[in-house]
Length: 150
Image (cartoon, rainbow, N blue to C red):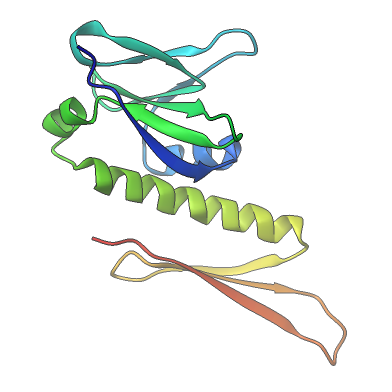
């Protein structure tokens, strides 16, 4: 019996996801052009994915592409929770917050904005301040807040 469970997300950018994983200190393997990687589950069960995030020596979380082009997470969440003592929801929230942080920075840069500051509040909320050079009569200053529930 497989314990793998799929989690739908709105992840669309693997570059930003990999940056988030690096921020969180999570090692991963990435598929090559012609070969997916394997995700380890309960009693040696395996599934294929574009990324395999190594949660413990026995269990991984996979990142698989959905039909709509987004990427979802798949893993043996029960076993991962048992070995890491971290709930799936907490892990997912931390990962998605770091992903959103990198995605916001990436999109801001694509649109010609400069990142002025990055601040993290005690509650884990991240605030990005961005600006763009504009004519003297028009000054653009935008802030993005990325929150996390603890």
